[in-house]
Length: 567
Image 1 (cartoon, rainbow, N blue to C red):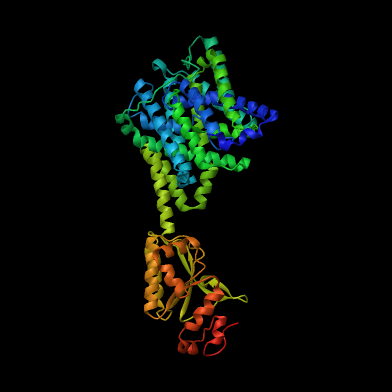
Image 2: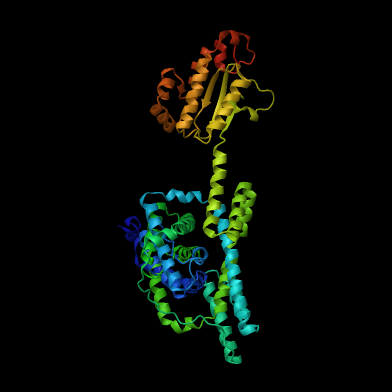
């Protein structure tokens, strides 16, 4: 299988490799504190965050679609994993690790199948408002867990230790300052260094110990084996599905964001393939759920990365850094790691995006708010599904009520204009109604469309002829075909007719399969232009009614009994 469509390696140059190497070094520096913090958030030993930034990152880079997305541990995945699996096993125990590896494997398989059967478009049903609600809810949960951990650190043996919140405060302050005044620098690493320095100085001067991270068991990811027993797979099926939705939503959002900035075309299904293979491989190398990381992908792009090798270099350099600084990592204060989680929670709540969503649409705001609240009140796997369900519900409600605008010729150019846009008195032909169909006619919309058509017949029984401008009707299913067939026969039975202007090829194909197309075409009920339609329909109108008509809104009325049409 060729990596990234087999084309990125053709662009390799010495200058590009240097750029990838420098971007990889920045990525390694960025993920070092993140991996430790996110692993703790997931209820795992800190080294698991390092492992997840190695093998999964390399596999996703080589088999995905984006040249700049860097995969690894993320805050949302870590929190979701902890929230869904902690009720089943005590975090950090062998049983918990077994469930984590199995869930990671299952998510990878689901992602692979989505890519294999080209269902990548399913990710489009996770709306930006749902993702914003999920991220905001995740931020609140992260902040809560971090605050609880910091509280326990500050009260060892029943006494308050000021140094623990002090280290946390210095860590956050240094991280915020670096991110604001030196945005290209590894802010979280600098914050961690500042907290570490304060803890060292305090312990040297006072002799009082500060809670430390402790030594990592191993820098090299050891081999592991997920539990593939039927009982465990059945137990984790629903959780794995929810985690897949969360991971895919993040991955595709990040991939699209990178594509907008870089101009690269993204193959969604190939991106899912890379993510799926990375999680499958990761489950055999002591890694937990990974996906595209915005915190690493955006700096990777801005650092000048040219190819996926930047992510590969990042993983290799990360291992080198961990091996060279094992003692230093063991001395990281726990309160500094907790402070980084508080910082991450703060950055996850995008006030500008939330404000924009609220201003844009009430329905989008409801989806955002419902997902946010659900994240705080119910299990996460159901919270994301509630948000997606609400989005689909609003979408179906919108599409189930397609607009049908009544048209009349208007202005010097005789443009067919919706009556609500015409100022002054509006005159319609007493025998022919013109309607523009704005939307698809499928099983969810047939009730509404049928009611509108019946209202047309009952309010204006003399308008036995109906010309539908069908250019915006892109799709009809069997229910929609039955609706138009019924309307065709009803109008034919009253001496009128149903006509269509420029129906889409997809719609015509559906009518051809059902047999309606032959009836429409045989009686000249489908037209390529409005002029052709009116030239055919107007002469078929009742001449006695035309003789008494004062509207005469069509140019073709000039040839009918009673005088000239409007020019």
